[in-house]
Image 1 (cartoon, helix red, strand yellow):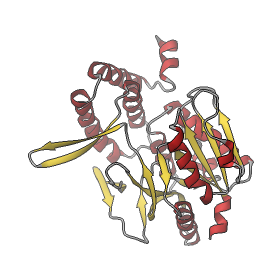
Image 2: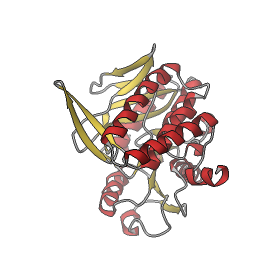
Image 3: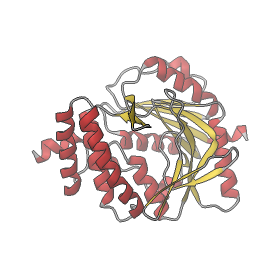
Image 4: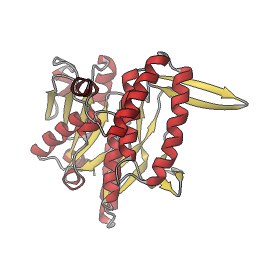
Length: 312
C-alpha cells in the first residue's frame, strides 16, 4: 500500500510559523506523501528552505496576507487537483504526523470504500504533546455528544473531524463543496463535515493513525473540589471574535445537527465564563466576544477588519 501514498498531496497552511517546528513538520510528512503544497498566509517571503522539499513535487503559494484558513486550504486543494493528485491531507503548522500516519489513513479510506461505505474523509487521533492527552472521536446523539472508545485496528464513526490530519479524495470537494471562506478561521472544518454528513457521506477516525497536535496557546489545569480540567487557552481577543461569531453562524444553518447546537450553547457559556475569569485582556476579550455574537446574529461573515471597514 505504500506506493498508493504517492497519490496523496499534503496541504500545509502556515502563518508566521516557528522555523524549527515548521521544518520538523515538513520532514515528518515528506516521506509519507507524493507531493506537498505550502500555503503561506503571512507576508510573502521565505518560510521554508527549498532543500527540505527538493525530493518531492512541491509548491509554496504566497497569499500575500492572512486570507484565512479556508481560503488557504481551498487554494491548496486546487493546486493538488491541477497536478493530478487523488487525495489531499490537510495539515496546519501546529501538527506533526507520526510515522506511517498517512499510509494508515489511506488504508482505512480504501478499506471502507471497498466495503461499500460512502466515506468522505478519515482522520487520525490527535495527541497534545504538552500533556499527552488524546482527543476522542465523537458522534451526536439525542441532545448530546457520544465519545467513541478507540481500540487498535478500529475505524470509528465520527460526525466531525479536525481538518489538520484529515485525508479526503480530491473529488469529494466537488460533491460537498470547498471550505467556507466566509468563516475565515474557526469551525471551518466543522461546517464542511456537517455538509458532508448532510449528503449521507460518512467520516471515520482511524485509531492507529496518530498525529501530534497543539490546541490553543497555553494549557492551564483547574482544580475544584477534587476535580480537575485541562483548559486550552486562546488569549487573542480577535480569535475570540471568530470563535463566537462562527459558532452562531453555524447555529443558523439548516444542515447543522441540532444535538451539536444544544451542547455547544452550553459549551459557549462555560468557555465565555472561563475566558472572562482566567484569560488575560478580559475586557477586550468580552468586547470581541460581544461583537462576534452580534455579527453572528446579523449573518455577517468574512475577515473582521473588512467587516468593520464596510459596516462601521
